[in-house]
Image 1 (cartoon, rainbow, N blue to C red):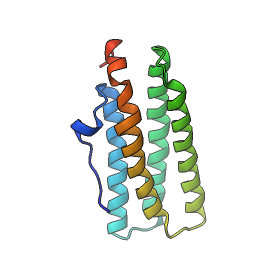
Image 2 (image 1 turned 180 degrees about the vertical axis):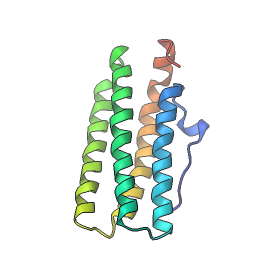
Image 3 (image 1 turned 60 degrees about the vertical axis):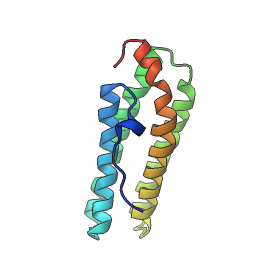
Image 4 (image 1 turned 90 degrees about the vertical axis):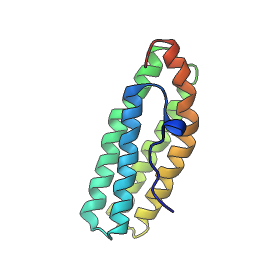
Length: 136
């Protein structure tokens, strides 16, 4: 199981700001893999979880506000998926506080799955919609 990188062909949502924010998630995933490889301590994992919370606050609010502003027809699906993402990050935080030794692995699987299922599939659906509303 290796790290994945942002790839324009697979991950581009045709909106610069949202692409930049998505790329931050890829950076967090890379940090997670580096920490696993280096057998980093608890402080490194705490920083990764903190970075995920920053990503959640910045990106999900931005994305939902844009989609809401332009009446994106699949906004509710986005919000439901985002809510599930936030819930999972909260679960990771709780597991971290219990000193779960499988947390690195579980987080890596979750983030890779999120990227494949959400960014590559769900988010890419709004690309043309936003572009048609002059959002690039």
